[in-house]
Image (cartoon, rainbow, N blue to C red):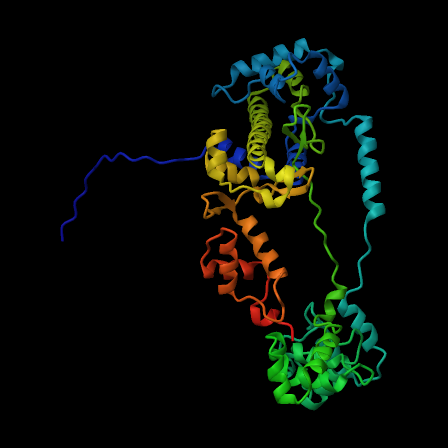
Length: 491
């Protein structure tokens, strides 16, 4: 075997993202509240970056060259961090700026204003006053009841172990023999079953069940209306109930259809998930990034909701430090922090501009939606917005991701305005949302004693000009949680 060593030249193209580009994309993708957290983090970590005070903003307004000057442009003209490699001209400019600015023209980044301190104190007080106490969990509630029973030590310990193994629905996910095996202490299976039966008598009814059937049966007592029929149909025909096969249940049980329907109505009062009542409901609040209103000319105009975001600037305190001719290490430290701060300010400004342009283009396309409601939405693809704004389609995707807009018709996710469509028999483009609304309208108006099959739904949609395949109708029916024709049938 012969080994050769040789040199070769090869040309290739590689695309590498600069750190500034990566940061700009990250900032663009952040929703409003996440951006606020990012800014607060940067304010805490970068000593050169500081928040403008109200007095600074007022003065900046007085000296602003024009109303349409973009946010941050004044600071950018005053400071150009990140230009030449040694950044010497920037430091000279910093010294000049420090001489031009009067001593009382800024607030040091290391000492917050009294108003800001008062605001922070009020905010902390509000948080403490509105902090919710820890709610009682299902396990706490069951253990509190279980401890009232006088049990031997091993049964007591095993009962506590069973309770801790209940899931958020209040059910056991493993069989009793499996739980006994991993319990760690010897306990007869009969004693374990007796302990489980005791837990199943606790409140709320239905806890400790091993499946849906047992959960429902545990909630039926002698006082429950139609308890005999309920036990029969739940024990042997639960799947038939789900599939709405009432005539089959009638033939097998001898109960009339009316009795079976009455029992099913009573069954709806039972709780298949008794443990969920103890879950703390987290209602996610939505803070719109944008809002849209009509101007005097009747045109919808997009406005950024940025009142929650602090106004940023590069601290003038460090220009004073440079006048004292610090050592090279200090200069390098300040240069690095200034570059980082300037990148952040520019990324936020670019986010504002891109988000506003993208949202305005979306609103211009969906004016009919805003005027007349969701049934007038038009098909829209992200590529159309990208072409109109002059950016890549991935930029549009990042701009609309997890962003919300407040409109006269409510708050919507920006992604809500995108969607494909189809062409009617008359050649008109219609969005899938309109077809789904029409499908729901047809199902709501059908004869429930003889509901329409998916093939019949295809024919009904065709009468309205929508030519769809059966599999498409089935897909949208299932996505809308519309049951099959058998399950929709009323006896």
